[in-house]
Length: 344
Image (cartoon, rainbow, N blue to C red):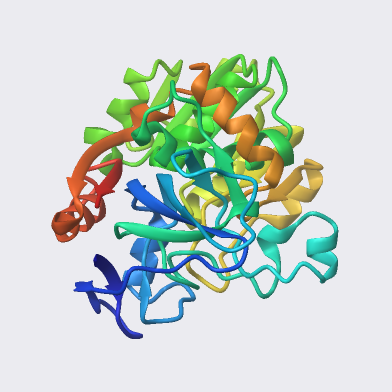
């Protein structure tokens, strides 16, 4: 079968090559991949900016159908449609695993960078990490459950968005849009999306199409002044950074109210960045970091998407065959696309 493989360390070294079909092991199932989303992590792996163990098949956001069961697999049946948590090789014994935080276990190696992933026809997964998807949900919608589960975990479970909150989202890429949709589904009264001039053509346009109340191009409008005007000088209850841009992260302290919350999702790709620490301390801000997804976020996300409360499928802008992976990465890196699905 064909697969998109990161063949060795270094910038680039991605190629479509023939690989053996995987065989499900103890407690595993074999999944026929129906759609797989390209994540920023995949782009970081391409550019040698994220840990990975080559040669490895990329891709961890997927939807699929079970086609075979490995030994002692007993909780799923052939033919069932599933998505899966990317928490493979968590040890199960460390204090993080034993407290239900397998997503940050030190030995975890997710599909797509630690072990072979979903940019291919077949993927094997432990059945303990799977979740069924309803018949009403399309394969494309199911393929964005994983990134949406990230925002549900980050915004709802970690930063605790509340009904009536004024929320600012920095960075209107796919994760930023999903974070805003999640906040709206959780009852936020008003959402302000903030982007750069380069976001105007695709990302900010999509934010407006999704019906967010305030969409700001920071080259045209001062977001801090706009948020103060909209909140009577108080500031936002919650600021969510999905940009990973140092100036945006620093601006969050001016955007958020005293005793407000700052949810950090975006990664900077740097060892350190400037941050107005004393100003944040004086405002008594609650700061939340998150990484990956919790078990509880998955079924919550599936239900929110299936009922239409989070129209996550609307962030998908391109659907391309696996053979056109180069075009897919090119469109994403040039910001001519939002979420691209590869179809094996």
